[in-house]
Length: 452
Image 1 (spheres, rainbow, N blue to C red):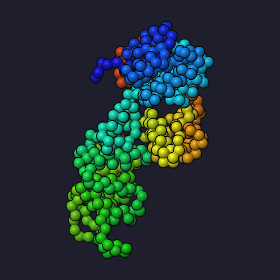
Image 2 (cartoon, rainbow, N blue to C red):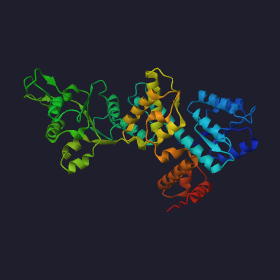
Image 3 (spheres, rainbow, N blue to C red):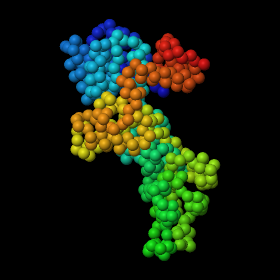
Image 4 (cartoon, rainbow, N blue to C red):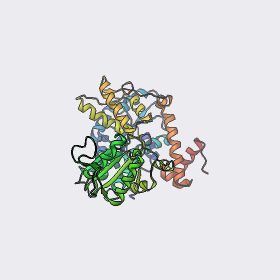
């Protein structure tokens, strides 16, 4: 691991505050700027991921015009930078206006060093996750995972696993709720495999009536039953030398499970009404939102078939467990829909972002996509408002503007996770969180948390 420090740019014209902030960020490489020209020069030279910005800069130290002009320049030059603006007790409206204009967060003056460090550490954490996601998307212009947008660690782990198992011929089962992107990942498995030049054939086992599913899978000979006027190949044969994706495999009826198991064991199919065994070379990928072990216990799914299909299991987290992905996906969907509709929607209002982030999304990515499409249609102005989303907002979501409460909850969650990962070792916990031991002790005392 590199020992190179992360770079933070501090834009502040007060030399006393410059020294205080530099002291506060002892674990970072701190670059200082006292005006707009110095800030732009430092931005071009050092390319910092995180910037703290006092909106009151010369020649307008008592106003905000210079600060807002610099904020716009920063976001034009480095749109992925996390800009944290300073806010005095009487300047909350300016801070919120800055966030609506693209700033990442704000901090209160007079400065609380511990609070500011936590805001900055979270900004670096998100910036690193987003950079990792961009690296994945840039691996190849035709990368199979290029269509998957995520910055959350659980989903990035899934991507890494997909890339690892794709070149093998192992049977894969994708486990996850409806709308989590199982077919997208199945296509990625195919496109990253040696079979990518072969066909990718998908069939939704829950969408086809039970009496037709067998003929869809295995095909039939002419005259095999009423209406069989010609020989028809099944999905398994059509996937020859490629990949067969069985979506909602848990809905396959028991009698057909027996025939599917025989195919997996013998790698031959026999069409309905036929007598000839036909060898087929396909890779099987399947998916389900159901609990197959429970179905095995109650006798509705064969255990031997499960082990044939699930040589490798991939668990896909629901959208609510993919921190930050809902807003990231929402922006991507909004860009696509506004382009399709030839509209110039610039983004979301702060309330709308808060509602998207706070919603549980029981329908996962599919529900999110539908809501954003509706919002793109309903939005009146340049920004999608909370009413355009048609989301039911809870009291917790509506009070999320209380940043102190949000930060406290995030701080406690981070402390619990770091203490768990370090087995309550104070030095390791402080290192994981990127704070000093005294700061960590202060936080533990503040939140009445005692390592056990």
